Length: 447
Image (cartoon, rainbow, N blue to C red):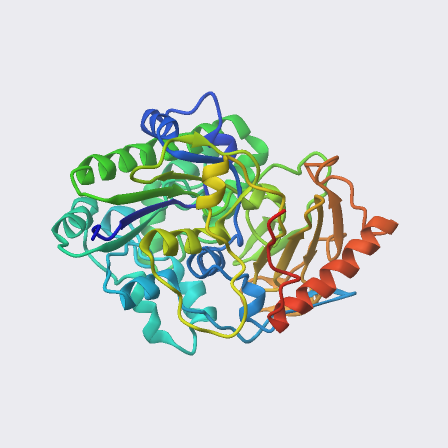
């Protein structure tokens, strides 16, 4: 009987695809890995916050099935009830796998402990806090300590790790602030000693200014973060290469916006913690394709390398892992939307399929793409509602929006007031409603 498959998954959090595909990148190991993996250069995630993206990646269900969000003719209404279906981590643990995560609470080398605890604990698992354990514990482990845990495991294992080096602006705050001349390391240390914030929103404010005022220098800073992640990924692969029967997945959960729309949008402002924040220049309640752009690299024993054509989806990660591990999900009501990618890997391409993305925090937003390339998006309809974190939110003109991605891939021309746009709105409302009912209309379908 063949030995069970082991898994090491490495998320390059919030990787900007402009950096990943840039000719200026300094990523020798990732470049080499592309050549020997099943490489999905064109992918899309399901949420701009790590908790929303993890929901889809780890369950194979659109988040709409697991909350009471509403879409109507006024736009998207954020939910206040949430549910997390059984995750691939729980499926594997139920089948005898050891879980070795470095997701929710970052090891010591990240210089911080914030991650999915905020969103996952506050929303998806607020009524089941005991399930947060699957994402890891606050730990003093460094990278080598986590690798030692993986190497010392005797049974089959699932080892997911979350790298924030590619996340702007969280990973390199000292360099980021220095770039814009906003505060020294000493000043930040004093603020921390006084109990004043040194991260959000001050680093996001700085990053958004840098993206607009010093785009070349800011891009160079992002690429240095990617280069550091490249070295960490190399270390993980080299330290685990003698472990038998391991499937590796290196992927990004979503991308960034920053300055993408600076030429055709007049950004509104909001004041957060005394900072006059520029809306629309970071991954937030703006569900554009640049935010959800990502990639995947699969290294699977016995499977040849190839570059995949078409658009890959993060929703398909969990069912692919389940098939490789020969593990069935728990029986639950509803329909699983993701599909194993292994048949597509054989064919070398992905067919056109429905895509869905949702962010549940604050006023919320969603994005729905039909097989024909028409995309509907909505920033929360309740934009006048006060949010405890962000105040009044909303992006003018985007409570309802429709784009033809085949002719307008940059989403500049809003077609919502055209016949195509009104037809798309009707499709989106009915599809979102069908997801709530657990029917197949809103799920993916092979073409």
